[in-house]
Image: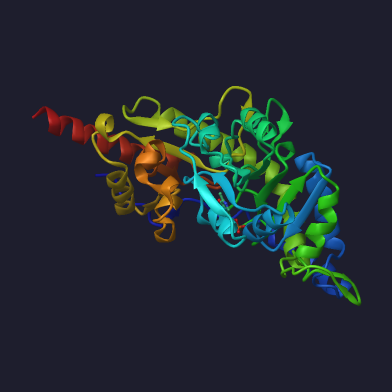
Amino acid sequence: MAKAFEQPIYVTRPLLPDFTDITERLRVVWNSKQLTNFGKQHDELSHQLKEYLEIDHISMFSNGTMALLLGLKALKLTGEVITTPFTFPATVQALDWNNLTPVFCDIDPVTFNIDADKIEALITEKTTAILGVHVFGNPCDVEKIQAIADKHGLKVIYDGAHAFGSKINDVPISSFGDMTMFSFHATKLFNTIEGGALTYNNPALDKSLDLLKNFGIASAEEVVVSGLNAKMNEVQAGVGLEVLKVIGEERSKRYIIKKAYEENLADIEGIQILTTLEGESSSYQYFVIRIDEAVFGQSRDAVHKELQKYNVFARKYFYPLCSDFEWYSDLPSARPENLPHAQQAVQQVLAMPYYGDLPVSSVALICGIIRELHITQKSLSQI
Ligand SMILES: *Cc1c(COP(=O)(O)O)cnc(C)c1O
């Protein structure tokens, strides 16, 4: 048996800019005496993100969940929204908090994104939108989804929390649908500690989102809608400006780690790597494998447990399925028999440690543990 790692290896590590740069940035914020409410850092980050994400309109928030929640509100949706069960809880909770009913659609077994071919059958007279998630940074079938939406007069919203910088045939992911949400949580590729944003093409949304994230305050003496407090503050934005400077380097490092995983795992039967499709470029947000127990000889849960013995903490992501949340137990679309691919994915997927500072030698060791598990199983089954 190989030796366990001395320090625990987690699935991700926040991208931390140089501490001196952060303190310099903080000094600028302190000197300005403005800590929040759309100051200089906020405006500068907003400007730079528009360029980075290649979009004309952006609205920044305290976190990605509030961005999505208020984005759905701004679109004035009602009734039912067709979405995926294979996502982070925030996606469906943003629907819940808008009194919208999720209608769960099964996923595509290759991309793990909402299966565009199964959407139309779920549309009723109550449907007002489709909420897709670009799972692990791989884009949804945006063209097919838009065609369905146009045909039925539906809005399209994307949870792009994993898709910062993803592209489809060189077209930025931020430009599809009516709105895309990005999360800038510490665990995401680009972070502002906590934070998030919406990108969109409709200029009218600028005003409504500004109101919704700031108590509906229109002017010193006017409150015009029932809003919330979901503003991004100056420290968050300042950190974001520093993180943005190092993101290119982080992507290059992750590219090398991705290649190392691919080389080390390529010939292990029953391990499939989730790759980007032709013409798509990845966000390098996660490195995810799928373990087919029948071929590999061990379940995903067994691999997950075995890695922990070596101080490696991979993650069952996403787990559990959102459709299995107790409060959806009465929803017909949440029944497991309607979601066979999602039910399978949730048992097979494992997100591997993936961050720029992860040594390639560690990647080889981690893959060695998985290989050994497979070989042991194989020899056992031959006895
Ligand atoms: C991280 C994440 C969110 C939530 O974003 P926060 O910024 O943490 O609120 C939503 N959806 C998905 C798919 C995520 O991974």
